[in-house]
Length: 262
Image (cartoon, rainbow, N blue to C red; front, side):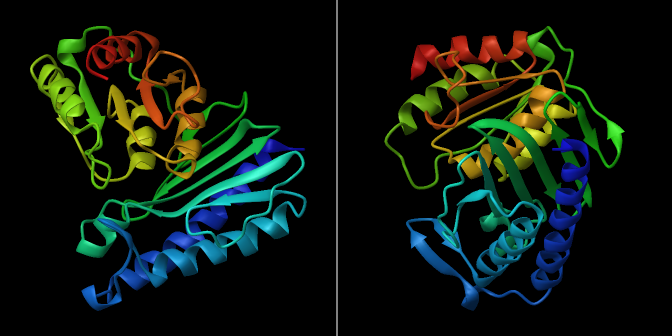
C-alpha cells in the first residue's frame, strides 16, 4: 500500500466534505440542533458529512471497516479500519464559532498509519502517514522544541457532559495556569492536536475523549516528532480516553501534574 498516495487522496476527501460543511454553516440555525445527551449536540450536517466520508473512503479501500462518531456504519475490518469524526467541534459550528474540523485516521492491525485533520475555516489540511513525516498544506511541520514550561501555551478541553472528574480537572487547571503562558480551549480536540503538531501549542491534554476525537491528530503529532500519552504516561490514549501530547519534555511535565490530581 502506498500510504503517501492514499493520504493525499484522504486529504482531498476531507476538503470536499469540509466544503459542504462550510456552505451549510451559512444558513444553519438553532432549530436544526439535535441532542444525543446533555450538552452532546449533533445536526444533519454531522450526519450527512459522515455519510459522505464513508461513501468516499469505502471506494478508496473497500476492505476497511469503520469506527464513526454518528454510527453511520459499524463494520469491523480484518486489518484496516477508518476512524472518523465528520465535524469535530459541533458546538462551535452550531454557535457560529469558526473553529471546527474533519478528522480521519486509518489503522492497520490497530496501529495508526494515516492521520488527517482539515480545519475548515482556515482551509488548513494537516496530515501524516506512518514514517512519512507530518505536513500542513504541503509544508513539513514539527512539534515545539520548548523545554521551559513557563514559556509554553497549552491547549485543553473543559468537561461538558461528564462532570465526574470536574474537581480534579479544576485543580490541575489551577496549577497549570499559574506556571505557563496560558491555557486555551478552542473546542476541537482534533485541531488542538494539529496545532500542537505544528508548534502553535506546546502541549495538549484532555480526558473523556473518544477514538474519533484523537486518532487523526495523534498520528500527526507523532510524525511531527512529538509523543502522545495517557495520564499515566503510557500510550493507551485511545482506550483510556486520556490524552497528553507535546514534545517528550513538555508531555512528561503535564503527566506529572495530572498524576497529582487524577
